[in-house]
View 1 (cartoon, rainbow, N blue to C red):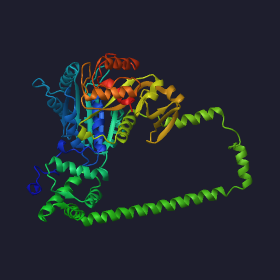
View 2: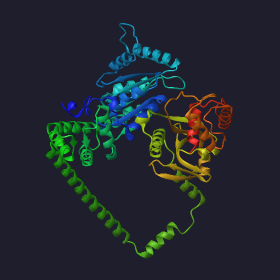
View 3: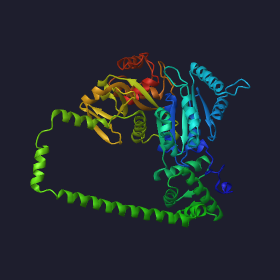
View 4: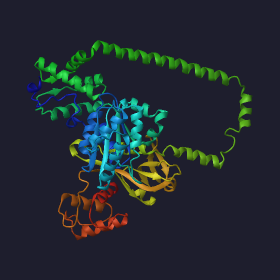
Length: 521
């Protein structure tokens, strides 16, 4: 109704999950990158959760547009199905031919396995995405676990993405699904938009809808919008859609905080919502009061117990227990030091999540949507003494005896040691000896690229050649800045590759570029 009035080609705040309208906030970008990492690295199971209207389905559809052309994909939207119906849908989505009249699980699984093996032998991958996965029965979830057994000796043939509401985590954590839960190594919970992202979200949708700039939103409008929507994209769409309708009926082209309040009142019964907010405040006040009383009671009880002892008895107890009167034995000091470092040892899920978070924090000018850039986690084998040469955050696997691989996430390093993240995300200092003793050899970091197959070779004349030469100079490989990939550049690149264990072919391919990206400031 209002599209022609505001000059839109289509409705900007539709509730349909159109991937063109996906706004890449840091949260949504991380979700996409977790998905791409899990699929491209063949991790088997990936879990993406988020509240109703958080944008999970839109992320799911946007992912399909970003998958490698060699990755076959299947998307299942109906999750109220039996295990047999699941197999039929998977076979149908992958366009696998099954002999007519075969209705057994074995026939379907054999057909799927043959398809996956042939796909893998041709250099392909396969991704199965299941939306609203919280509705899957335990039998279906167990069937999915069994499908994950379709693998070669080294890699998974199919990557299974479960997308659902937060309760999906509780379902999978149940004892009956322990085996499935342990197989999920890539997880991400999609959070609501921050206040600072609301403006970008709204403007992005207006632009995609073909807006000509004849509509404005006030600063107060965004504050109200964030307050009432709590950062939920679906609610933002509903409120903005109603706000535009109100503006149209009032013949105005500016959305104010007042119009947003009117829209909320129309949609959600403002008075009820207002009383709900007040009730929440009352509940928190009550809880705070109860906690305060309990704290006072606990402190008072503890104080009374302390005063049961005379100062003489306390002195005798101290002497008897040798509290602080003797130096801590060397073994205890080693134990204490070990306890300080155990919380910097991270699992696969946490280490990947922290890597992406560090990337976004350090690369603040990076715009996932505008740059049309793909993020990849690259792996290199390094001798431990090279850690000081890595200038951007990275993770390294550690030597450990457990079956589950563990990692350190390093922010920066120097000759004395390194700054890393612990399992709470806080920065911690570790010594050089600790790092060298635990160094497992494989360092990984996030690398942004546009074209993975883009190569620079002898004879090339390109602005990227000049950037390459500048970076090599920073690393101490001195070369004239000509912008031409001449023989001198070829020889220097070849020497760099040889120094760091790459194939010394003199061609600057993706792995050479990713290493230079990591080492050059």
